[in-house]
Image (cartoon, rainbow, N blue to C red; front, side, top):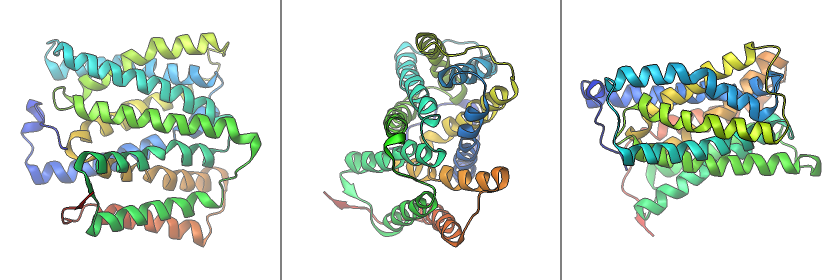
Amino acid sequence: MTAKIESLDESKVTAPQAGRWAFLALLAGNVSLSIGAMLVRLADTGPTASAFWRMTLALPFLLFFAWRESGGMLPPRPAITVAAAAGVFFALDLAAWHIGILQTKVANATLFGNCASLLLVVWTIFLTRSLPRGWQAAAILLAFAGSALLMGQSYELSPAYLVGDLLSLLAGVLYTAYVILMQRVRGTLAPWTALGISSATCVPILLGTALALGETILPQNWTPLILLALTSQIIGQGLMTWSLPRFSPLVIGLTLLVQPAVAALTGWLMFGETLGPIDLFGGMLVGAALVLIRLPSRAGRPI
């Protein structure tokens, strides 16, 4: 389900070059997104308010890039509608996940928030009406096994974390809808334009939610919020949005599992959390899955 790419700048890139750069962009985007949970915890605003500032601080840059990209021309109305709908799902995803991060362990939030990986694999099977085979099937098994090992030692099922776990799970479902809609609209809109429209849609929803919940809106320390806007929205979502039309939902879903691996590495570097042999082996499995998913595979078996 690779959408047609109509951006003039992107059309200058040859197919092999686009494939290599797009996969690197997809991975780099996920690495940038993976530090978001840590920055949300460091912010001194409410959780939804931190999502609001993530969007608000990034939006002027995104709109400027979109204006440069489109030459000041307005995009088609149907495409604006789809991108705005994606923004609604993204705003709800961020609200649910940011609140969930503060009500459960980071490992739990990462695990449940990345249920989008599994849902995008299921969506691929639904679209193609075929089961993955060959290298694709092996990559799926390795990726989920590796993620389970990475999260298995730090994940903790507890009634105290139930609300946070459920919110993180809801966030993963909402993020799946966002990715599907953004992948669809990227067949018509260039990346910064699509991201600018969806991000602008998020701002009033997140501000209204934060005010309704009585959260602290204005921060004392702007550093975590500026870093959140830069790493998660401009770099992370920017790279993800650019690469979306070049891959199937299955490949996109599996690359989301880079985030638990980077989260474990960040915990080791920043907080002195021990990485044992099981963690390292899990990370190696995820890495192997990302190599395998780029290999050609035979068509799947019809369902």
